[in-house]
Length: 258
Ligand SMILES: [Zn+2]
View 1 (cartoon, rainbow, N blue to C red):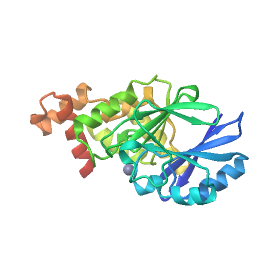
View 2: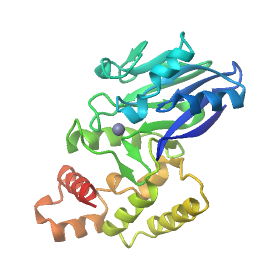
View 3: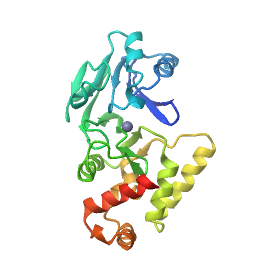
């Protein structure tokens, strides 16, 4: 079993999920088919499955080319985004099982960035693929859902075991951490993560994966109850009034303008 990040476009990730026993692999999101097919070949595995997290072009733009190369490909995607994700063969809902060779995972419905966004959780790999909903130290923009919906979606991911690895859709980590520090400058774990992430990028390395447990320690979108964040927000926006959804919405609004 292995998970391999395949960089796509400028800062996207596709991820190969490899099942050693069957030599089959799946790919979570694909914008550039050639790079994904090359990596599967290099690993000596057969690509049989695509797991699309949401309909945005930088996540599904490679589906058609993959399908042209592998006609019997299985493509999972949310029922709610059926007309928008190219090539869906298996339309799924929250809680549905997905398979890659002998590996079994399940879809978790996490709408708000898009209306049908799903994460894919593989308990045996202790890994979740969070697309553009949960980033390292950040979350996705609210294109097709409100703050309350996103907060609920993130809380479903936060409820996974702390040692669950988080594989997200973009390398946005350094900028996210910089923003987080404006809200919680006293958070030492956050400051240390920022230094670490900058160092990784200087060395040309990726910052994925993170873990659910770590995200709870420094991701401001999972920390609406942090006294320091609340105090800082109340100073600039008294109307948030210690209300979780309002605090979340304000953090998202500040991040949009950051
Ligand atoms: Zn997106």
